[in-house]
Figure 1: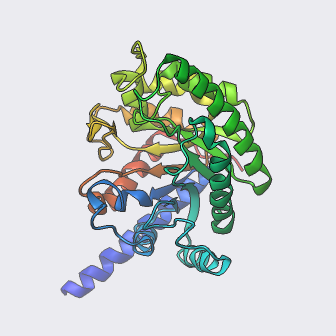
Figure 2: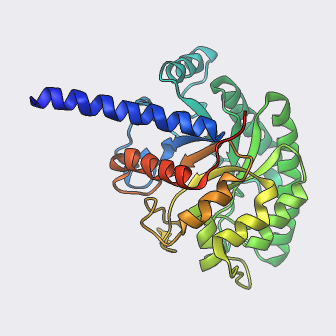
Length: 329
């Protein structure tokens, strides 16, 4: 067989496998997206890959959707300030047959734990909420903003209450737009103890507020207890125990592996799936049992993320195939 003929056969086989995998994910009521920030953060900060190129790669690889980075140089509101520019982006994703699983907004200009930042935060939230609506994103990611160690005990308690009230108000603002507020806890920001994560979600207590469960952050927060305020807290069952504790409040899932280390001494080092310490075969069925539509592959900080696009999706599809039961019609 000639080289070009072999390539065509392999391409058809690959496309056939992608179609079959997508069909299986539809049957199990879950979809897989690719986080675009992996190609503009960390090792890619000085050589970012344009969003359109990432989206085309995700579509070609067989992903169902993309999770959008709202930081420059990707889809920040200030870079796409008009309805026309955003319609063009939405049209691109439709043409590629990619859904949107979420929008990771940039909150660096409005730390929500600072007392005087309430209105600034809400104004910034409204800008990003408009971006979500224009791009068809069902969720907007938030974080607690403050770095561990920057608050003393009285400040810590006050910031906890302030943040809960602010996120409750933001969740209420987002609800009419059909956009869910999802909080990604991590060791890079305050309120990262297992008990704090559960308590903060309970204190927000809004039906439009959910937790974004990143498996890598879950490992570092529940097993390593990195960068926690005061006395360290770990869970004997690690990631699975934290998942069980938070399960009723989880609204989004990010998938990344972990060796327990920190990237730049700040937040969790993300490893390729299957290359760290997380027992994904044991975790998969529990994740599939959650009423969450999307699993997002998060390759942030991975030096070779561009080469991991296809292998990561294949890994997720193997997990799903081994641990799921097709949904009944």
